[in-house]
Length: 289
Length: 238
Ligand SMILES: Nc1ncnc2c1ncn2[C@@H]1O[C@H](COP(=O)(O)OP(=O)(O)OP(=O)(O)O)[C@@H](O)[C@H]1O
Ligand SMILES: [Mg+2]
Figure: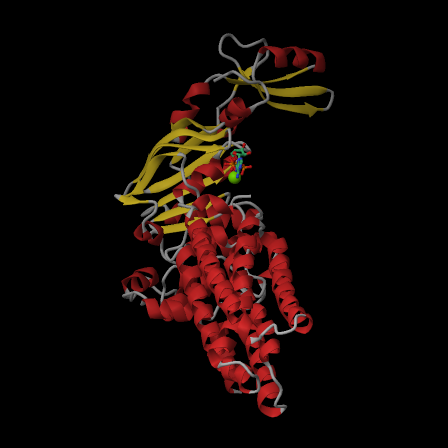
């Protein structure tokens, strides 16, 4: 099983949204991480055949994105989606099942099972119009699994989920990733930190890094420090180092920053996490690439 | 008593979790749907108002022509644009409700879904046309061929304008615009009939045929353009 993205670019009018991205994905969970406007949705749309790349090619096990078999193996949750106004949750699932080419009995069995999975069974017959944002999102997730996809692509799947559902979702994804390719985008670091085997870090249309959590945090490992200081001292430090976090604690300020050479007096070395890396790359201060 | 017992039993004994449920479900053969099944499944998702409207038009024509013995030609052909509204609005519905992205990425993509639904609606409209034709013809002075052409002209005009509009305007505005176009054509047709002497006169028939030919070519062209646009994935992005 392999998804190949080969030097794919997307140009909108005169703006480059995705810039020559190449990827090879195998079974497992991939977390696509990037700030707003990084080009995550554009990339994902191209992988799902909804948007035509300006250049480059995408294939899955030798099938081109345009093929019916490619789409048959795909489950896709768009960043935002609508529904026909008269639909109930069940109607929506049946409708998607009909588009995915499931027969009626299979559609019924799958719908029951999946609505159960996302804990929407008791509102299956309610109109989607009456759903909360998180409920609609869960319905969207359920829909992707109808055809038991080999390639599961989710654009910000955890948007609007409460902490309890978020955990459930994480466990579900971890399980699903065992025998299929799961690609999910997010800008919430903790969503992918623990479940994604591979992190794809995207910035301004370019793929900055790809690798396991250990691999990609390598860049700042042993260079993250924390220290509690007076306000004016802190001001000085923000000019010198890339700041990861800045938090007031009473009179003083708790600073978390990256430092390449010798740290200032009083600073303590801390373990670098994905969040540190993310903030390091996407902090206001540019040019630490 | 019985249901009470059941409930009690349920409370006392928890049913064991089904083992290997996933494996079992996966092992079930999932038969492929045929094209016919797909068409039928899509017919179910055509909005109810379309069927109701068609039935209403038929009943009006039936009562007018069969019971009141009126010349229904102008009335029936004024209703034709409303029938044309169905396939036209259907072509923009996915976008209006923001379902396009989901539909494009599923196995039977938006294009086939649309083709299926437009095919069904076209067929239904054709059937209705043949049902209305004798009703429009029976109390008037025109031949059946003439009647047919008089009826189809406003239909084709609405399809042409409506499809053209729905490729340029999207969403809610598009639905309103198409409705306005259909109403406009319907009213225009009725108004012209009232004001122009010999609107349906025999000596004018060649112009009608010419108009029908041109409108048909235009409508088919718009159909092709619309389907083509759904194939091209970039269209749905805001
Ligand atoms: N249809 C479009 N026309 C023009 N520019 C677009 C279009 N869609 C996206 N863009 C631009 O392309 C860039 C990438 O957008 P994209 O939606 O892929 O980002 P994203 O990473 O998904 O962001 P977010 O986290 O906000 O969802 C943005 O700068 C955006 O302005
Ligand atoms: Mg996005």
